[in-house]
Image (cartoon, rainbow, N blue to C red; front, top):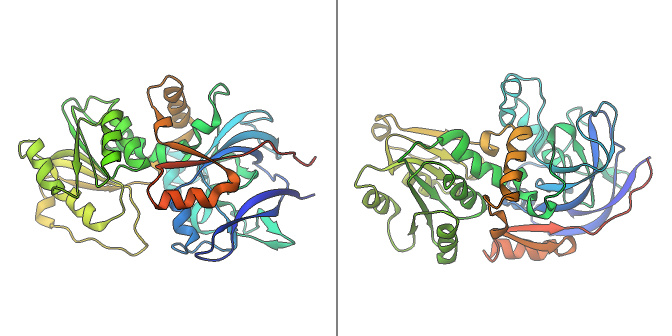
Length: 376
């Protein structure tokens, strides 16, 4: 039998999120039914909703979910009903990168998470009046009161930590933190620059503050966000609307440049500034994602002193170990994620979208009331 739930549906590119009743399949092999408690709203959701990626619409998005397991399908062994879980991306588990502990670079990552809208076998997880909808977004489609989730995308977490406070760990936060911890790996005395003080950039700042880096420079155009960056651990801030970031970094580093740069804005002009600001043997981590096909011009000779430019997906995280560690840091107050979060009832998703686009909120988190579940 199918399971009826309420979801935020995007009918066509550029259409708003509208609440509607939809039907979920029963949990299949290695699938889990999760009652959503909270889910973050991410720029990736907005980009797909306006048609920036070839995801099938009408569809249900959402990929920073957190909730409670209601039922499990055959062959599920990692979680049981009642477990608290954070939802992240899914992966095949069998390709070379998955076996090597890098599931964010799964050979089937794009169709499984971002553009397919279906299970790996081509079947739909969500329908409406018998017609399939785009779903399985990041293996979860968490803009719904109930979500059908791939077991590989679930992480069991400490039930004493409020789920509303950790929902964004599944995407934006682990991306920013992973850029610092998994790629840059700062050494004593390093200088790190974070370009963009949104949720990913501020997560990178918080992560950098827990490393031996001695200079942490946050760059943005919004004064309030730069102030927050200082409160979260930035040692210096640069208002890109007032001064040239490259000149500012050169001044702050006595001309040596930055050992590590995290680019979160998706602007190719900002990416180029980040590359030019690198010290010899420095690394630029590209996190911000402009539209497919976007190219950037680089000074090739400027790269020869050992500079590296590295693309990054989801922090290059192995979620089963990475996310519980982040939860522990949130619990201990060492990762003050609450400073980024603004909460909205699920029914107010369009207001959350407007506030996010206007820069009024850094990380909107949608919250759900308790819902009844049909017996399986």
